[in-house]
Length: 183
Image (cartoon, rainbow, N blue to C red; front, side):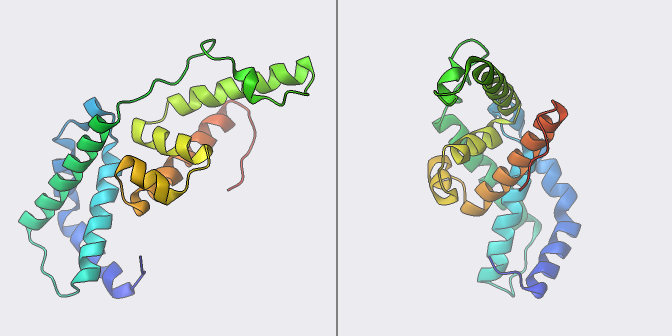
């Protein structure tokens, strides 16, 4: 995605003109029941509008086009949410997290590491579903492109979900006293 200042200004004008309408349309679809964060849909709409501006720099975007963009983003997100039912993360005690700890570590170190892994899993479980899935796949080593293919989202949408998910995860872990995290 290029960062042409003219396109950026046009997108800013579009969002200034239609931003409240976009948010209202997104909120009207009751996305919480699908585990979808409205901010993620709003970001996807912005990405689609940006790409449309890149394709046709002289396009005039009317209310109907904006509404269709919102609706298609919502439909795509709901389809993706239905296609991959949420896997419940193991709650404390369900899975032996010591398997994730270095096997040569002593009992005390294994206990501390096991507790930290449990806290990480709890913090991860608190993320909205789409962010949680993207962060979990990222932590497993999948690329943005692969995560996008799994989730049916654009690579840019996955990048944004990952950024927001990791930021929230860092904040929650820091609040639990698990330290500061670098980028």
